[in-house]
Length: 167
Image 1: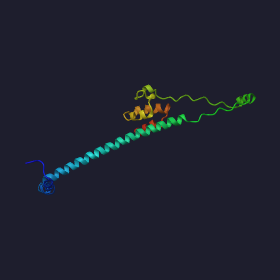
Image 2 (image 1 turned 90 degrees about the horizontal axis):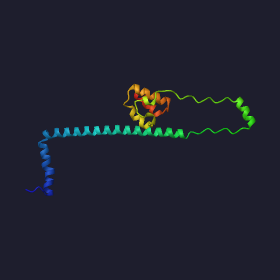
Image 3 (image 1 turned 135 degrees about the horizontal axis):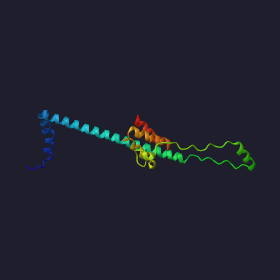
Image 4 (image 1 turned 30 degrees about the vertical axis):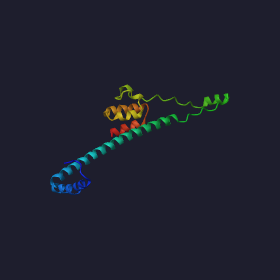
């Protein structure tokens, strides 16, 4: 007998024999169909959760990068103080005697040395490169990074992530 069936035979198989076979074997086939459906829903749920987690990770990285760029841009675009107009020599001399001098620049804050941090080459990394590396650090290592960052660059992205991790 030929494997090719006419359209009429295919229609009879589909609309008569398939429902009849399903009806006669429903007690065997139905549990298998239910189990397959459950497996497919479980797999779809796992893929969905993975996609959401991956999306959150990528969004966090993108936000950190944008915040870092905005902070750098804000630092570069800060208005520079204008020099005072030159005064006449006599006025300048009298002002020098009576005008208090501006205080000297404060010494940089102290903190742990960058070489002692758990993240290699820390001082050369951008905030978007540091933030993902913070998750694997211990509480003490996070404290060291926080101390260094607060004393040197004060990047809010990194400090906020450390605060979040330390809960």
